[in-house]
Image 1: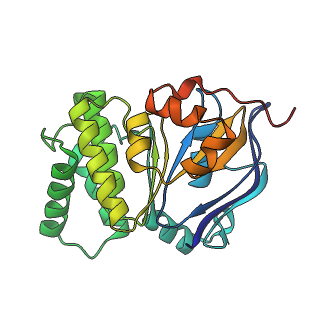
Image 2: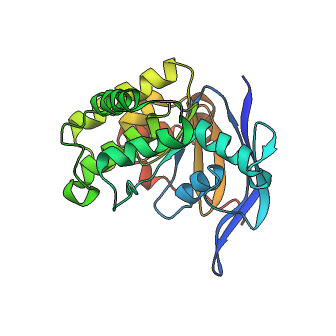
Length: 255
């Protein structure tokens, strides 16, 4: 099992507030890692920091041994082609059509594709996530759930090795959630690495190989479900099964 990301004593501050404090994690290739914790615990900030979207004021993040904040432009472009990110709020380009939201990443990362190949790729990925509306719409014309499907489709379209997903099932109905779990299961079987923030117990139970619990901006515990359950007296697994992840309370390790 190869190391993919190393989060080395990372702390993140926004204004005067410290969101993450001295977090260290090893994230491994080919695993589905779920980052869980109560609202406001810092889990989304951790995911964005791993993705290189937020800059730590202390510590470093390494991808395959390379500091992601020391990459040159060519290395960063390669990193972005290998690792895709889907935001919790979809974060589609508001002034672009749905087609362009999906085609533009292909133009950047797969410029060799011609128009018919791009069209076929766009069609294939929207069918895969279950988006049934037109491609000429703009994001404002879609429901939040539909925007989320396009965001997930955009994260898949360049066939990245790593999927970084922030609350991927949020705003999706049951049918869409089941389809997403099927898609992620297929990605996992294909050897892709999945790192996601989620509070969805069903998703965790069906996908997760590894779990990181974030509490009060620190890493409370990490490991496989089998490893973590004894440490918490089975509480984490019980709450996953009962869809009560946000009720998990852990003592602040800084105290």
